[in-house]
Length: 75
Image (cartoon, rainbow, N blue to C red; front, side, top):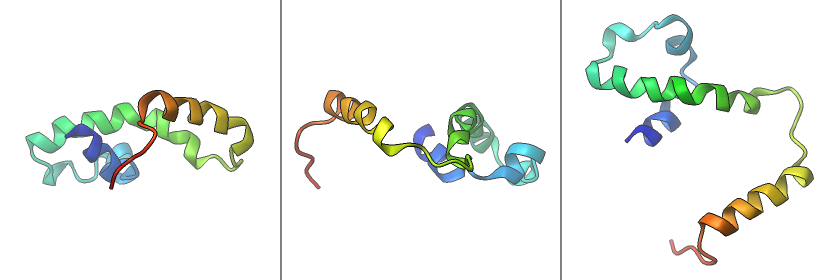
């Protein structure tokens, strides 16, 4: 599943930049790592030296949660 692969390898910079581990990756890894590369530009904001303003972002994410998640989540 690409999403789980992205979560696991999104900070694997030695592979992102230099391809340092390509020699130990199989065809399946190379295929899924393409998803990691596509995700990478959207992950960069998390590395900013300036913390996001939570009060400004909260309404946006609350609206998304209300739109896509049920009122109660069962565990």
